[in-house]
Length: 151
Image 1 (cartoon, rainbow, N blue to C red):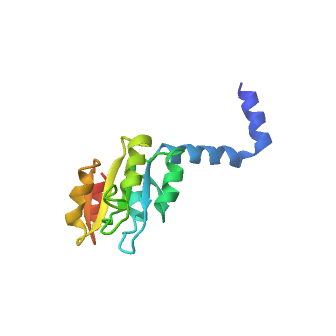
Image 2 (cartoon, helix red, strand yellow):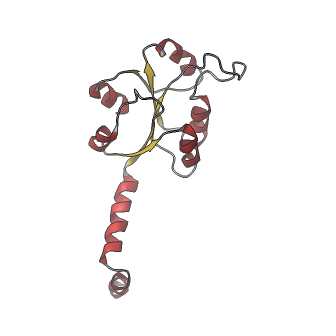
Image 3 (cartoon, rainbow, N blue to C red):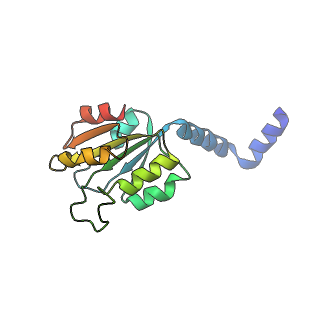
């Protein structure tokens, strides 16, 4: 068996095995979906590295939804915007309704962290009445507040 492994290693080269090991190490880390829809959204790059999280950043929820079936996250961080004048006849409370509904189906155990501007905070309980939220962070947030919400 060792001979077969050695022969395979010689065929593909030593770099491939190292790449596979690195890929397995990355795959074992918890996956964080970081959905950035606001200029006030904090940069979570350094914090996710410190916490040992694999971070996937999305600039739209649609892109996150397309990845949700293939790689469900362990954590979701997203900006909250209340639907003041939406045309859904009251069916949707905010920009996060569709995403959080999909999270219930494809990643029911994921932690949900909502980031909201202080002016939007009074409307977050309406979303919390529909979906389980693990943390709500008022923006602008400190690194300590973000770390507390992610752990």
